[in-house]
Figure 1: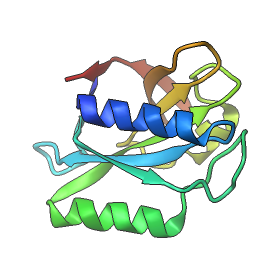
Figure 2: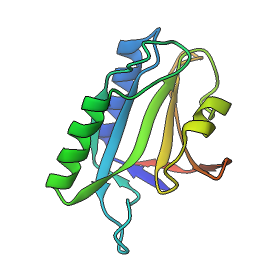
Figure 3: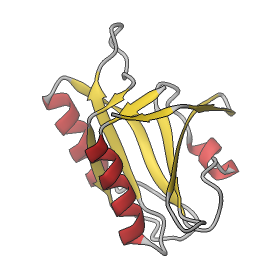
Length: 138
């Protein structure tokens, strides 16, 4: 299960809607787990520019990524999720998403904009295997 605050949820949905028709992207950070790895609580959302400027793929802007990482480090936290939107497809990882998923400790959150209301889903992607997980807004 991945837990995010109401503020994080509201901000990532708002970014997806604001960036439409392009894919939006960002990072989430939170406290480390008891074993020092990225944890399961998303407390801060870091919007990132989609350097690809595309409606079909996203590329996190390297400077935005670095700023998010520095902010997490300053709090003794870690980046624990990457967020992006799917503008015309289901909120399920595409083959491109799976190929780009190189951090097994991260949660992969997708905001689907295909229907009238945004749909937010979370996944773990490890060695190409996609596992849906519960997303709790707390």
